[in-house]
Image 1 (tube, helix red, strand yellow):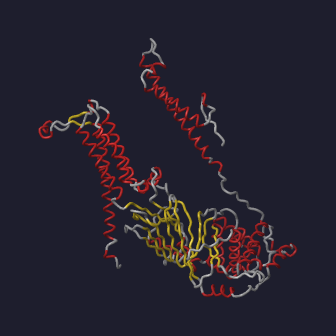
Image 2 (image 1 turned 120 degrees about the horizontal axis):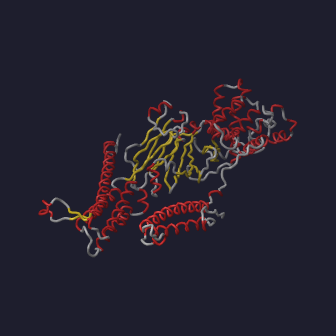
Image 3 (image 1 turned 90 degrees about the vertical axis):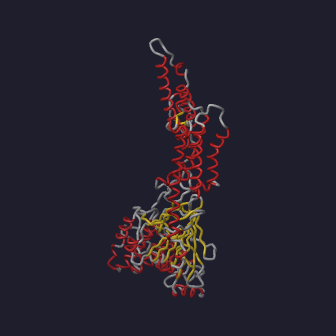
Length: 634
């Protein structure tokens, strides 16, 4: 491991950061001792006839304290450098470099992928895949999104119910009964032979930039299976997941409705299937000619890395400028939209067995991080204190691809949904029903809100008629009152009562220290921790108020015990009440220091009581207004 050299002066200037940090701290401790202990400062700066003793010691103490602070600062810098060196942050591989590559090589790779896919899958499977990719709302009847917190991440399970028309599956089943699929253009063998002879290429294969467009490969390579491949539709191809380019998918598993695992296509085969889809849409727009334009669009779609949407639109318009007048404007807009989507996203394709009916269910699971953990001050504090997240930000992109979408998330033990709302990911503004109607008159959204339920549920319908937007939903869980907050409040009240009584009953500890009283004071904090938490897991799920209240209870108990052990000076003991009340109350004295600690404990107990009352009142109102027996049949 490479070692950094610590900055510094003196004998530790060239030492390792860890040794330098320890050395600085030792020297700082010695200087603090000089500044605090009597006599050491005078030994360093002895008095002279012209200078009094107190002046020399004061200067020595001030100088020692200042130098100690400087050494502590330098020790922190050295320790920080040592920590960063040990973490080896700089040894990560970093982001992959984007190699644009040669255009002819890119065209050849696309052709090979399309040929390979044509040999494996029949044209009906590829055509059905294209329709499911281009018109997802037509085939995705229902999507159920279930999220479960697992440690510091979320496990997402997405179940999609697909449907298909009679023509789609009848074509698949018809081809399944045929030994081979008849060719409609040329065979793959003829294609490869044509591609191998440059002399057979026409001038149409040169695009506007004098680069080969790949048109030397006949159309048969790009669209149809060969009569020699013998492919049978034992599988259908399904666009299972679409994700932004550059996004890593963590722990992805896919299965059918029965739980059987489904395989994914390789990246090359998925590229070939998508190329078939894009070619089919291109031919609907411009016909079967203009191969150079087609290859220009394929290079745009399969370009490595992310492309800005504005640059993609500019590239598209420039590529189709020469043939734009021959295209139907509606179909051209559709092709432009498909290219813009494929430029920004990649498709994960799965093989699935053909359904016995006209509907089937596919499912996939993945792991996503807990987004927005430090977006607000309260969430940042939960991270600092080691508490588990109670607020979750979930992206809402699946509703725009299906007719019906359901989201569910359990709150966990002894918790309920306190707030659940939808907002814009860009601006953070809350989305209301009037804004939903502006998106589409058919769009419908409903949330199980303010019902004190142990699970979150969001339902959307006909969002596939809306233009996709970057929406997220915020879900905030809270503990069912009284819970740990109620127990913390009772323990804080007990601690405040004991400390305050101690200030009056034993104002001055002039005799022996009572071990029973000390044991009781010091036991309040650990008893509170065990009583409230049962376990560390429950304490981590509690609110910030519970955690801070429990911490203050422990601190006040320890502070009262320290003040009780120390013999109180005379200035700390004061008389209580006017002399008129002496016959009634007797002669009372109070330890002012312990009393102030008791007042802090009382304020802590009062705040916990107010917070518990608000939480409990709100929870009971939700139960009274929503979850009554009168609403069972509504």
